[in-house]
Image (cartoon, rainbow, N blue to C red):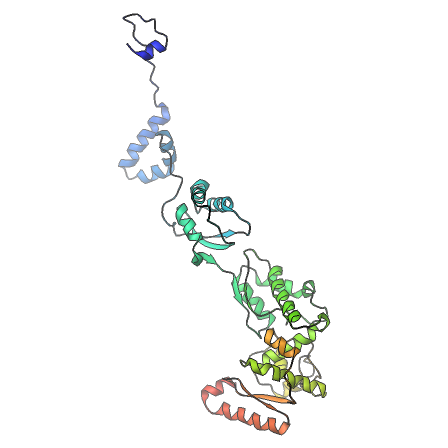
Length: 381
């Protein structure tokens, strides 16, 4: 006798039989799905059927769909930004929303297995439809991190520095230029002609999402720190930067010559002599590609940066000086030199002179060097 029948309240008679429960049918969807499965698997439309009804088929047949993709992605690249302060759940959610991983749970489960996993803020290059394990591995691989790193060489112009920042980040050049035009917002004195000279040349790594204002402020703050370290009072910053920028442009590759060059210019200022720097003339002309000036260019007093025609320092810096140039401007070498000339433009070898006659002889060395070979002549164009 069926114990199930007794439990369900049979009268217990010897001939009693349990009542059969009515069997539930699959219902219309069940039969439709079954037919689709059969047709889909045996015809060329199988891929279409599965791609459109796959999850429904799995649901009806009681098969749970996988919560993860397989493999290292479908080849479609995407950038994931991990912000400072993001924790594991934040990263898991971003990956799911971006279509990198299939589900939040697939990725987060891996983090629960290893509490030591951490993420560095930054921009990361991943692919869509990656397995959770592949996505985690990619985020921990430094090669996939997009570094917003830019190197600003010493002596370049502020305009060039802004172009380099724009090329290495997602900041539009126009936004950088607009922020730089409003330079007093960074504490730069209003009597400075521009932001020229106030951006410290170095290598910078910018955080994800850095703004034009934030990027420029970083460079300006570093220049302030350099000036402070050199003992420059705030009211003297513009003068020091102007001198330092000329020293930077005139020194070439030989850092040891910077204090001597600064002494030459300071000696000339102290004696009331014109500085006569070709570099200042070229900056005023908007051309920093040459070391030579023409008689007409040197005679043009309308160029406010022309130190052949205008006494003293020019109205402002002519480039971005580094720390060595700043230190040279603050502490020139001891000496009585009034002239200098680079006699080998390849090595930067420079001769310092006390008299004009000595300087003229040194200048002839430069002209002779330029004529020695076509290679040398290329430096003298």
